[in-house]
Amino acid sequence: MRAARFLGAPVGRVRPAAEGFSRKRSGARPGPLPFVSSCGDRMNGYAPLILVVVLALITPAMLLVVSSLLGAKRTERTKGEPYECGIPQPAPPRRAVPVKYYLVAVLFLLFDVEAVFLYPWAVVYRRLGLFGFVEMAVFLAMLVAGLVYVWKRGALEWD
Amino acid sequence: MQQLLDRFIESRGWTGDWAIELVYFLGMLFFAVALLLVVVTPFTGIVSWAERRIAARMQSRVGPNRVGPQGILQWAADGLKCILKEDLIPEDADRILFTAAPYLVFCGLFGAFAVLPFSEHLVIADLDAGAFYVMAITSLVPLGIIMSGWASNNKWSLLGGMRSAAQIISYEIPAALSLLAVVLAAGTLSLQGIIRAQGWSPADWFLFRNPFLFTGFFYFFVANLAEGNRTPFDLPEAESELVAGYSTEYSGMRFAFFMLAEWANLYVVASVVNVAFLGGWNVPPIAEGVVLTILQMVVFAAKSLVLVFVIIWVRWTLPRLRVDQMMLLCWKYLVPLSFLNVLGTAVWMMIVPEGSAAGRVASWLLVLVGLSLSGLFGLRVRKNLKDADVGRLYLNPFS
Image 1 (cartoon, rainbow over the protein chains, first blue to last red):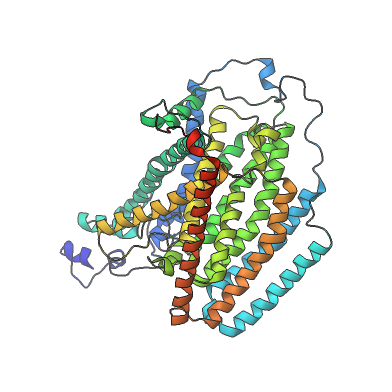
Image 2: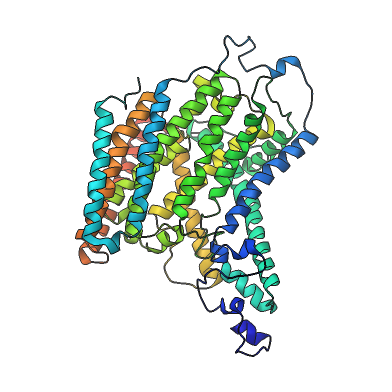
């Protein structure tokens, strides 16, 4: 609004972009650059995240290039050997991993996915009232029953 | 952020769509680069120095004190040294996974900075699902760690990687459930929204909102310590057992990325705890405009840095847990207790409405409890120091 006046443009032809000043959280706005415009609330959307992640990938790459240009390069046969205090590695290290790690992974999947299910409920809990509470109490009771079950079966013992 | 850029566009009188899009894009780029250069890198560097100095102080040593005043530029020297080192890849290593792992670790932690607020308006992206995003993107870190452990073709690395993955995913559950109680109380997933739901006085913080959130703070803190591989949960890189854990075979800059991520994680953990429980940037309404923003930044940074110090303090005080103790603590104590927390918070919100007199009284009572607990702790420490006669061992840390 103010930007339009600033340019001396007629107030009737307010551009959506200029209107953004008066609206606090404007919605998605069609524009010529889909990348920035598609991020909904513009600065508060997801486009900055892509930027940050890309930056997080470029920076290490650049540092590694600099490092490979400046760093020492003296190849030697023993340098490529696995670290074992100088003796040959007794056995190839990539062998079967104990099954308890898989058990932990499965338990994690179960409980973390359930925790994720709880989040939307937590956001709208106030509006749901007693109904939401009872529903989730049942859900939590089932989860806790699962925990008790794996506990009793000894899945939580590490040795 | 958006308001800042809007004001900038307004002052220039640009109205074309292209100009606005370009300003937004460049603005975002500018803030992201500035974040990396001004916040992440120096912070992690200075914390690495501070940690060594604090550790030395706690063990009656001197610590790094040669590069710059009090050795504060040690991190720059270390970084430069890492750049100048040879980048070794072991012969039998899985080259693709070996080279990709540091990227994932770095990406996972730097990505989390995108939603961490610095003040009311200074945040790169105030996502509606901010709390979710932090949990999701930091989950890239165990992926990178397990990749590095597997790819190194070294048994120490593999053991470290597996332990780390098991530990991080286990503690993800109590962390997620404790944060759930906060989301329940705040009614939003946005980190800025969670801060806005609190106030500047301690009684308005979620830490003192109800007894369940009070205990939840400790579960969340412990779980985050474990997720950051900090002592007493530093089994993945236990120096005395596993050489250097998953980073045994890494050298030069790639090794530096793992270290950088470890110290950057300190800030991420501290500020997420700060946002969730300690009121974030909330300040009393005594200023406005730029002064207010600076005040908020100072308050937020101060709270986060105190937490960072506590994490370092814990690291140099406690011994390491055994693997089975660590898993026991998570699955048999923290997980059931944080379930109880979620339920308790939900019940509390039903019984004690927000802003009611009973709620206020409970908050202030909890503040008193917190104060008396820290008072007792202080007295205890004082007594222990007296009994141990530390004056005899005292070493001037600034010599």
